[in-house]
Length: 577
Image 1 (cartoon, helix red, strand yellow):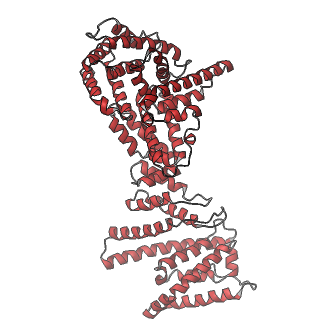
Image 2: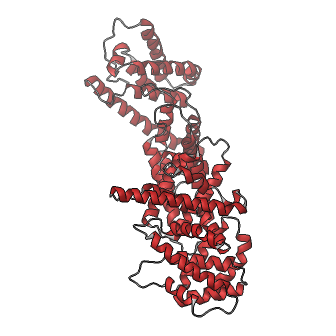
Image 3: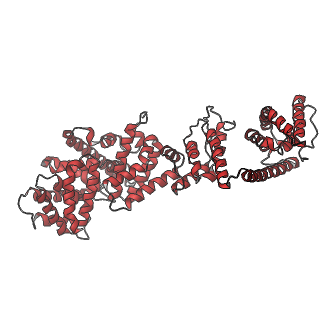
């Protein structure tokens, strides 16, 4: 075959050993190209190993050249040698030789041709590769007919073999800390990831994709193609790709958009289902793999927590969202405790939270004796109250409306740790008069964190009044009252339109907590509860709040003692909802 890149004048200064070595191989290839006999095939097989070595040496030499022009000037027979070699099927049938041959051709390709020689060389290389591809397909068709193998089976076996080789490359770890100008194994892995882009929806490629995502790297170069990450994330989000749990976590580490999709999908599942049970909520969170991913990578938790924070600012009264945040945080802390090598401080996961209340709020009630709960809540209430007053005073003094960022972070942390809110509700029922102030303030802060936007101090007055009526109702041992305290309490649950909302959710929580924890018999508590909610017309709301309390309490390990009473109260409310 005559090619356009071989008609060059040798450089007299070229090292003769290289020219002579290439000349010898060219003469050998010419012999192979002239006859297709058994002797020729035998000779090719005997020379395959040294041919591979020479092609590898040639590839290194080509890559060391500054341009194709320089390579052809030093080795004028190079184009003719490669051109003839491409049309010897017993050479191109060998995977290693074919790969080296193609890399030599690609090394001669100029991305930006500087002269007519390089432009013509590019044209010839493209034509040669195109013909080789067509010829390979024809050979495959002939082989399928000869072996009697269906095309689908043949191509599937070829695909699996190709994927196995790619996965072998993906398993090689780069141990050299190279800079951006050096060639390293990361280049091969990146090329492998690019080759997988058309295969992201192919089930056979899932194992390779998972291996690529989990591959460690030390190079400063990006180990995986951005297009590969984007295609993989899109396929996984659309349920067109199935990945093992470790690979999913690695995908989120590589792709923030995929992580955001997973968090938003979890939120949608929870917020659109009005009948989510405790078991269902915990199952959704666990199956999402997000708590496990957050425990393994602090950066993932920061993204997830920021999404929850932004959502809470927009839907601060959404009880389902609060339940999701609380339950998710509990699952995350459990996963974090199982990490064998946990060197990241807790503050790194909550960098914006006030340091003084971080650990006390994240401590689970089960991690301390019950007799210490009251003092712990009193301290928490006092600390949060001082923080809120200092933030609000500073804002008033500055005359700005900066949004009280530190106060919001403290409140967000309380929402994330609302098991202490449930403990406060339980203790309030058995509290002495002197203990009520701290607990009621903490509960009011949970529902109304600021004065300017939420009228916290005004709501606290209403809540104290409501709590007084509730105490009066549940200390009466007679028949359920139809007037008096129940009437006043019903008025607080159903305010006039021009009045600010007096936190019906909080008042209902106080009422339901008294029904659950009161020493009164269940029948008496049920009658009082029904009398109040029916009079105020909030039976449906009471059922929702009771369901939320059940979900939160189940996370604290106390459901086993409260479950029969909760179920009885739910059944009493059911006919009226």
